[in-house]
Image (cartoon, rainbow, N blue to C red; front, side, top):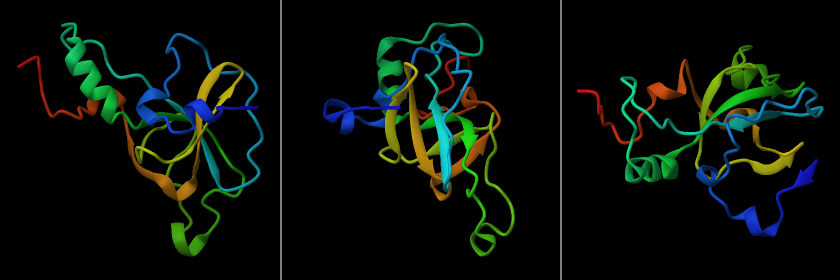
Length: 140
C-alpha cells in the first residue's frame, strides 16, 4: 500500500476519485480493525434521459461528492454491540455517503481509495446517481 503523500494529504474527497473504467483490484488489503475500505465514485456526466451535463454542473457536483462503493469491511467493524445494536451499517457492494474530509486517502494498485472508521458512514443509498447535491432535475 502506498500512501497518498503530502501533496494530496489535504485533498478533499471530491478530488480523490479514480477513473471509473479501471477495475477494482482483484486482491484487497487485509483490514484487521474497525475500518471500511471505500472506492469513491465519479459524479454522473449525463442526466437519466441522456443529456450531457455542463462542466459548471459537474464542477459543482464534484465539490460536494462524498459517495463511494464499499469494497471491504474490517473484521472488527460493527462489533460494538452497544453502539451498532448488532447490525452492520454497510456491506461490500453498498454505495455509502461519508463526510467531505473524512478518511485516509491512499493508492492501492493504482486505484484511489479511502479508509473510513465504521461509524463514519452517514447513509447507504441504492444508486449514487439518485443523489443530486444541487437538487436539480435537468430532465424536467
